[in-house]
Structures are given as C-alpha cells and as structure tokens.
Length: 191
Image (cartoon, rainbow, N blue to C red; front, side, top):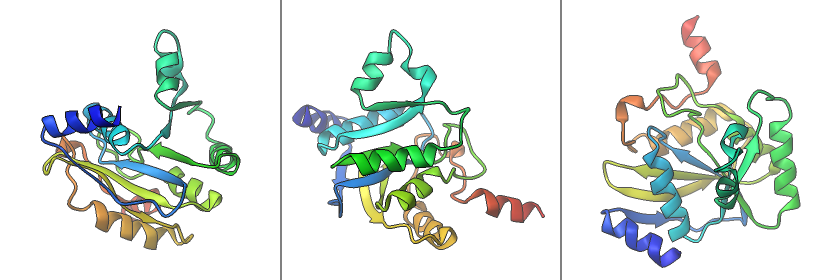
C-alpha cells in the first residue's frame, strides 16, 4: 500500500514530506480542511508515510453499509452531541495504546469556520503527547507533517506557533479557510 500511495501522489504531482515523530503517540491535526479531497490526499499521505492514524468521525458515518469500511480506515465513531468527556476518552485511548496517532481536523467543517475547535489541543495536553502539524497545501501540491508541538498549557502562545506554521498553507478552496484562532479570541473582538 505504501508504494501504491507514493506512486499515486507522484502521479498527481504531490510531494510527501514527513518530519520524524518525537514520540510513538501524538495528535495529528489536518489543515486546512476545505474540501472532501483533503481526505483523499491525506489518506494517501498517511499510507505513503506508513502512519496508521486513527480518526474521530461522527457516529452517523459508521452506519451500514459504509461503517465497516470507515472502521477499517481507522475511524473511531463519536457522538458529537455529547461533548462532555471526549477529551478524557481520547486521553484514555492514548494511555492504553503503545503506539497511536489520532487525526483531528480542528476547523471542524469544510466550510469557513470563525475559529478552530480546541479539543485536539486539550486531548494532547491531557495525554501528554505532541501535536503533529499535518497539512495538505494544494497551492504547492505538498502534503505531510511539518513539525511537532508539545502543548504547554498556554493555549494562546501555542496557537500563535500553530498559526505561524499554517500561515502559508493553502487549501483546495482557499475561500473556505477560516482564521486560526480560538473561540475566546473571537469573543474578545466582538466586545
């Protein structure tokens, strides 16, 4: 699968770049997330880099007939209507597993979001694992992991570093890319 994925990426003009992980466990964020093609390109990149990433998806995606395929592709169904306890549940998964990468798209939608959801940050912080800065830059046709950040607990400072990394990454539909900021920053501007 690795050779096929790398071949397909090259065939379509994509370059795969993956910085080696500092840990066998990490939260992998995927951004920008502006189209369904992000999933296809990202999946090829994961296969090409031999990363067996798990990902959280709304439970509705796991119903028959596609449910078995979604699980085989690494999906973990979650009930998005129950926000309480998700960070703790994911931290527990990290404690149980010897090696795991959990993929999160912090924009939470393919549409333009006013801020990034911060669950990925708190999952990594609670589990004591780094955040892998995964990206698919459609302008450069480059996909991979550009670096890792250990969350410090100072979310504003850490988001400034994340924002700096993603500032030159362009999604397939740039008009759907929202700003990389947390909800509190949006609320402060509104006041």
